[in-house]
Each structure stands twice: as structure tokens, then as C-alpha cells.
Image (tube, rainbow, N blue to C red; front, top):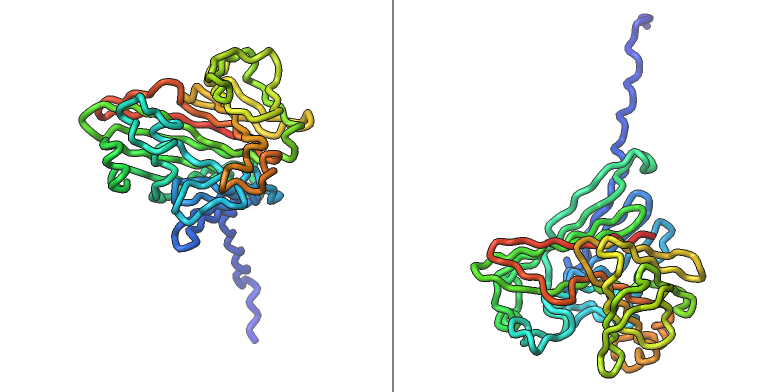
Length: 320
């Protein structure tokens, strides 16, 4: 055998790609899910573009979803983060939305998945992507005939859900695609999972004006200079005194559990049905109100008006 003192050295192994977020469309193309290399995950039902699950790296669920939640596209989902558009509640005195069902049609329409994008961070373990953004779209072309008749306007919505190691960002872009102006309301109806409602306090709403929808008659008052505690049925629409950029925090047992930072969403709705949960057909278990609190970012006091061709954008970051 001929000696080859200058034989080529072994080829260096080709470095593998950094870990990437995994995005899947499952359940007969009805659900989009994403998992980061670090383990955080999110699931979004195309029906309503409703976020039904959000877990941290340890697999702990951050959202509350009713055990009786209907996810087959026959009714709005009870829990997670449903979307309210173009009306909050009902508005019988507002001509443009008076014929719409409660909370409008966004949460009961099937959205289109528009795709994903990622961002990189050197801080991510193994140099992988640190976040993934999932985009969903809805326009008047996708509406049911019933919804088109009730709200005969041309529009386009792009809803972006961004999952990162530190939280969940939800952003809505609203565009008037028609030739006439129209107005709307928007709410991100977040059901946050907690362990014991009696140990929960909400800060960031001190000395803020709020509408108490439980009071009879419905009244407007100012909250005290202290944390909000839930001790009974609660349904309030706050206008935080600190403005839309002021963070709202949810603590449990004195330890901060969630923080919510809003962008162009001036109101915060705080809701818990308390023992009245037993009269809500798809709310389960009946005492599930002890493990949830809704702290919802929205533009629901008055109306946002869009002229032909105009756009509006608002969103929130829920940090953990």
C-alpha cells in the first residue's frame, strides 16, 4: 500500500441548522400550533382565530379554557382568547352594528392562516429562533351571508399572534377596504389561568374611571387607590388613569403572574362570573371561576372610525 503523508484531512462536519420553531396545521386543517425550540407553545383555532392554548417552557398552561368549550365551529369558544369585533356586547342604539349578535362576528368566522415569520436572538439556547409570529386574515368575502347583511361593509383584518420565551403578543390591523366610512370596537377577550381567585389582585387600575356593568343601574365610578380584588361577580370596563401605555399586572399570593402592556387599546375589561358561572351553559366546571380571571385589552368605549382606505392597529403584550 502506497504511503500518502499528505492525504487530505477529514472533512469537517457540516454544522446543523439552529433549532427552528415548529409550526403545524392539524385537526383537519382547523388548528394552527407552534412550538419554540425552548418549549413554549401556542394553539390557535381557525374558527374565530381563537387562541385556545398557551404554555410556557415547562408545559404549564397560561390560559383558562372551559371543559365544555365548543371547538367544532358551531359557536364561540368559551375561554382562551376570543376576538371581539366589530362590536363589544350589543349596541341596539348604534345603527351600523345594531343587527349583529353579541360581540360581533370575528369570533364566529373562519379565518385564513396567512403564514409565519421568525426572529433570531443570540440569547436563545443553541442559537435558534427566539419567537414566531403567526398571521391570520379575515375579510368580508369570508363572512356568512347573515353577517354580510347585518354589517354590509368592506374590510380586511390581519391578526398577528407572536409567541416568545417571555410572553404572547396579539396585534390587530383593521383596514377599511370600501368607499364609505364605518366605525368599530375591538376587544381581546383574554381568559387568564390562575390557581385561586381569592388570592388574586390587579394593579395598574388605581384611581381609574370604570363602568360597573353589574351595578343596577349601570354606573360609572372611580376605583380606589389600591389593587383590584375579585370578591364577587365582576364586569367592569376600566379606562386606566395612566393611559394606554400603563402596564396592568395580575398577581397571585403577592407574586406577579402576568403583566399586560397595551398599544392603542385604551380600555381594560375585568370579568369574572363568580357563582353565576353555573348558569352559563358552556362554562365548566361550575366552580371554574376560581381558576380564571379575564383581563381584556380593548377599544370599547365609544367607536373607532375609519374612512375609506384608512387603517387602524392595536395590540397587547401579555408577559409572564
